[in-house]
Length: 155
Image (cartoon, rainbow, N blue to C red; front, side, top):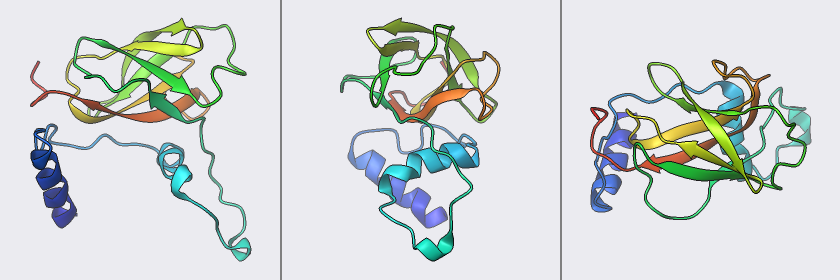
């Protein structure tokens, strides 16, 4: 892993980004990691059987502008909000010290989400129906990988 970390730091530095914007990686559960990996899985041998995993609806950032702490972003799922109920949703930014929950504003089938303090570099956000929970039964979409500009987690 140390070699991979050096490679990542070199590539980030070459792109004029902070080589190591956060000292620790955010923990993600197995189904959330599978959701991120699922688009890259083309097939599995039939003899392996069904994977005991679920992939949540994909969540992605809308647009290509800068993402900064204190600002807001738009997120969307593939296929829009089809099947989402009329309850309140929250964005959970997953960090090493636990998730930070912010309210979600629904805008034309998309989710407007604030970017909380303390998130920089590659960050993960999921949409959940329950403030305070990123348990699989509460997550409705994501995680999305969002690159937040900044050089440290100090602001």
